[in-house]
Length: 50
Image (cartoon, rainbow, N blue to C red):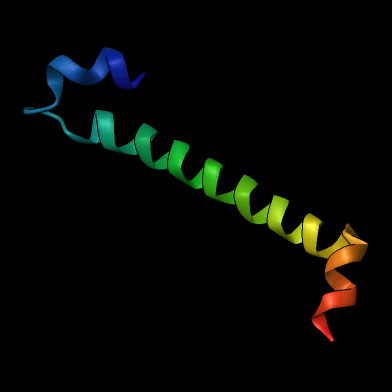
């Protein structure tokens, strides 16, 4: 979608920015989920936390 919208970036920047924001939020959500799962499930981190 972003590549298809590149020719229209000057006239309609939202065609590029909205899919880009969706990708950004998806990647951020997966990173936060991965960090939370690691913190919850990794027993070696619990030993060093105290």
